[in-house]
Image (cartoon, rainbow, N blue to C red; front, side, top):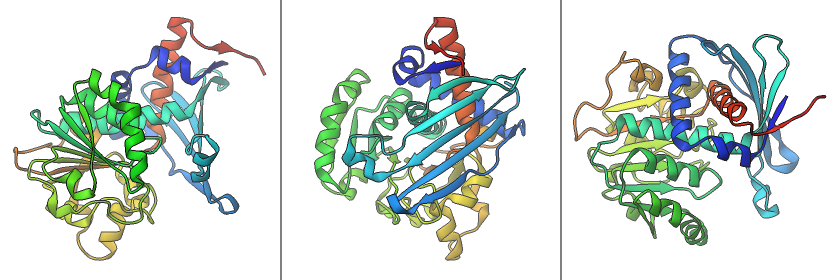
Length: 329
């Protein structure tokens, strides 16, 4: 098997590559070519964490794999990733392990690329101001993804832990500058949202992180961070105002996303609010943004086809470049 580290991945795989890999995964999923059980979540109550197991089979590339991922918020104090992960990709002919891939980087890139795909498909082409909520382990990749697909000039950063905002800006200003954007610290959620063309929320908040009534007409919003029924970072008012609401995986979102589950239970709206999946939009089966004043929203909880397809694309490039370390068990 080929073992690929973070450094190996970054040597052969870019954010643009990740966006194209996600497009392939979304298309295969919406074509019904994949088998994706809902992920298994196990609580690690003693350590205030979670273990997640995410298997999938991706037809079209005929590859199966599994991502083993944990969410341990206490890792931040230990200088370790809060969301460590490993991806195992199987050989299509023998069923043996073909690759063992450092999954934290893969997850960061494929998850950020979801917002990249959605923003590329749905945000107004003239978008110039962005807002990013959350400065955790996903945030840098999320920033890179939206800057890869839209020529934003300013991105406002907000986090309830304001000291983290300054550190985030310091760490990411060079990358943002190369992509033509200036990062600024927002002192409150309203300051971040007001006038923003592209808004990305990447938090695990149990309650909405901004006022949905302040989102400007024509904005596009990505809901990335909330992935359980108990989490809800997007305000219901935003979803009610939105002209088009898209998801990555309808079944998974309706089972796992508190952003939709909670307001549905409250009777604010039903499943009809979902216009469709990103894969259907890529296939031309449904309509995207219909005018410049329409608010568009994309909600994702992630699903394992994204990991399998991204792992396959990374492995293909690594083998061609002679990158990685081969081992036998």
